Structure formats: structure tokens, C-alpha cells
Length: 161
Image (cartoon, rainbow, N blue to C red; front, top):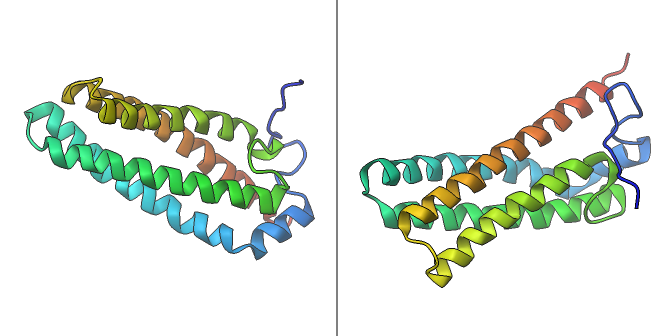
């Protein structure tokens, strides 16, 4: 199976005209546009709570709940993102235009899911759980940056020359 790469800004466009039309007409585009900043806000609140717990030992319950909420928000945006990708590109994941973002999203999902599994299974103590959450959050920040770069690329490609 050949490795697919995302198109470069100077290469073929991120969207074909038909894909751009489907993207612009899809309600899932709006859903993603709303969920992305909501997830980022949840992330910021949770990050503060996790760092507070690690620094002071206080607020374990709030930090734990916030990571669970962040993870559920991630699952929601991933599910709706898969639907969006199907509508726009005809496949649920790994469309060539978003291949590497989707690959990295799998790492983000794995780390967040590992947190839930460790929490439910009692496999890590509270500090270990919070360090795992921070690893998941670091991966999330990288993944979010990937998508922001793609959004910028799409905007630049959508501007008539």
C-alpha cells in the first residue's frame, strides 16, 4: 500500500471544485466549526485544572472530570469529523487531503482512550493519570495545529488570483 501524502500548497488544491461545493453545502462543516472552538475551550479549562492539581495536589476530582469531558468532546468531534469527511471526500477517514491529520488524530484518540482505560481500571494513581492527560493534550495541540494549517491553506487556495 503506497503512502499517501497531503498536497502541498503549491501542488494540487486541497479541495476539488466539487469537494469545495459539498464542504460549503454541508451542515457538518458548521458542526465542525462550532465543535472545534468548544473543544479548545474545554481543553484550556481542563489544562488549567490538571496543572493546578499537579502543582498543588488540590482539585483532583475537578481535574479528572475535566479530562473525561475533554475526551468525550474529542470523541464527538472525531465522530462528526468522520461524517464530514465522508460527505466531502467520500470516505470516513484518511482522505488524501487530510491523511496525516487523521493519522495523528489516531494517536490523540489512543492517548485520550488510554486515560479513560487507566482511570476505569485503576491502573494509575492520580498524578500518573494527570501526566497521561498532559501527554494526550500535547498530542491534541499538535493535531489542532495541523488542522489550523489546513484551514489556512484552504482559505488561501479559495481566494481568486
